[in-house]
Length: 492
Image (cartoon, rainbow, N blue to C red; front, side, top):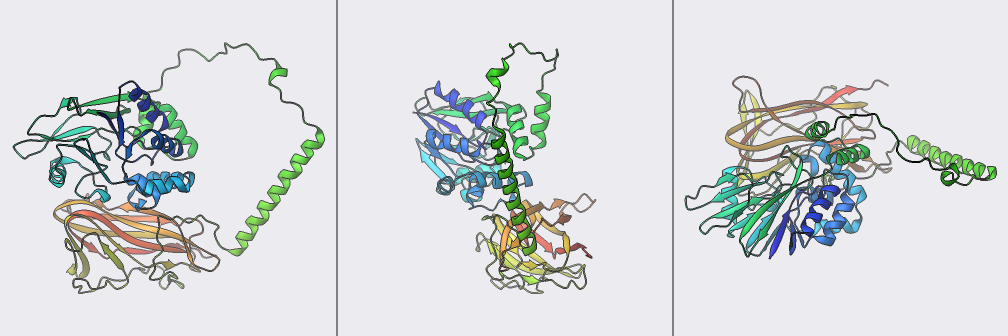
């Protein structure tokens, strides 16, 4: 049996079609996709329909889960979040239901597959480095493992020494006494620098793995992204500029002129033209009246974002009017003492594994801090109720804070603001969210400090906001109380 292993198609139809064309001549029996059919790219419907027709097994990727509404996209970059919204709007209910049913793991033919890693497939961890490879080798027993997610083709090998080592992608045959983790690379969003799509074929009779790279229409992809209004990552722009061919002659036409009577459309009667104009004016009038109604009602006609949850504990929000003083921190202070399982007043928090994650409070520089310790790479989320900005005139929010990491520490921490409009009955309608990762300090002697200080303008129609801290890490983290408050207030 010959298996094609593909991953990270990311809604890039030309790149995916190139792979299918290549597979048609290679005698492949089955196609296995490691996930991320959607996300990033401009062709979610076309690619998903093709995968449904041609791919035998498709796994759940983090972008698939985000578009399907079962994974929080706030950890994504702004452009990736924009793509999630774009894809969700264009895919049918049947498509989203199919995405939600995708499995996280798959085993057949003596090999095992996941999108991220095998220790916790639903967390979509990146398998990078020897430590992550060793953890996945220990989590499953098969000799040959396939993962995607990083977009970087490569091979992790472990033998009798028990220490994994990394090899650059290349064809090989499985050897007795050795185990392998293979990343086939990305079909639709390669990050290798040469902008070639990558996949591999596993032959279980020859016990061989072969890598294949193909070019794709990067200029066409770039033009499609511009057409839908989603910016590319800088490397795509750079590569598109590098690949432009020099113009050696001016453009001329080599075709015969087409007679005008063959191209001209039949003339419409003047009466038809007037009817058309009157119809257009009527439509514009209806739209204008509708817009005036919504403006006067003072409520936003927005499409709810199902990926953002409305807190059940305080759906009405905490009223901030009047702002006294205007620079007051909206966040409740950390409690001086916090025992295991005790509530965090003014906040809600969630653990991924309560046996391996611990909360406490402490004191640093005469201020109370929140301490979080994760015994392994796990997620923790701490969030506020909704804040009701009605009548305050707030146009932007200032968000700042810092944290200290223990040694060792691996992972990331993000601050997030979620924005909500309001229905006619005043209930919140989730619109969108923005996330910002805390970055290491550049000051000398502060290598263990993560910090953030940002001004965030409020989107149009914002009535409620919610602040949250979202971390995915292993080790210990000590959080000073963040500041979230009004940046500017309208005097009108």
